[in-house]
Image 1 (cartoon, rainbow, N blue to C red):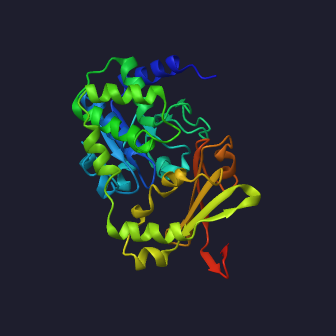
Image 2 (cartoon, one colour):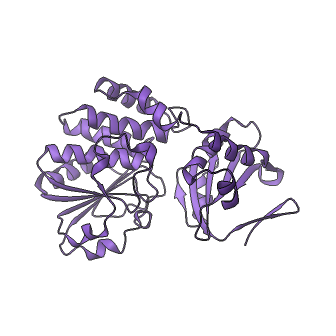
Length: 321
């Protein structure tokens, strides 16, 4: 079993002697990976470090309010610079960064630190801190910062609170624990405005988004044999409802309200011949095992995967072609 205290000390010692640090978030970034990235960025800058924040994809519009979001780079040329430390935040695999080959271009030796909360994380890197019992990487980072007795500010607190709130669905999904509630309370004390965070990240619903959700809700189907409820969204649905990909986010969490079905599955086409699957459960099933069959991962009660192909629905039958 991992000794978090020793690993926390190892991470701090590496950061303390580091000069140039690269922070990496996962592709299609959410509030947890970006909130964690920007909080770490702020802390490191205050320590006088030279820091670069990177993600292959830009900050989603709804997260532009986050402090330090303007510092995120999507430029692959950052990998031509020298670093002594590289830190991935909320990345269950190196592949999820979509930068596994770019990392090979860094012209210097560096210490690789992996900070994450996904149970499917294999523990890659030179120093790996993986805490599956923690609601979010932001909560894990809050714990690290408390261990390190950092000098807090409102921006760090806001970024971390965003990570906890978005990954727990507004402190409502099964990942929510006493520890995550306690961390959120502490972050509010340190200046985070959780009402603003919830309004911006969770309570921004457009008519077009509701139209899209209406199509998915109309298609809800239960498979009795597997105690599974599923639905799907196609590229055509996105186009006809004039909704972007972000509009489908949160649907699998919302379907927790169903009393039928131990497992919830939402399939959505996202272009480039790709289908994304989101799995949720309130039961005892370990969803990481199901997602792992398709090369995905996540948590026991919330996991996801991607497949190549398109959705074909004909005669009330859904196929992947």
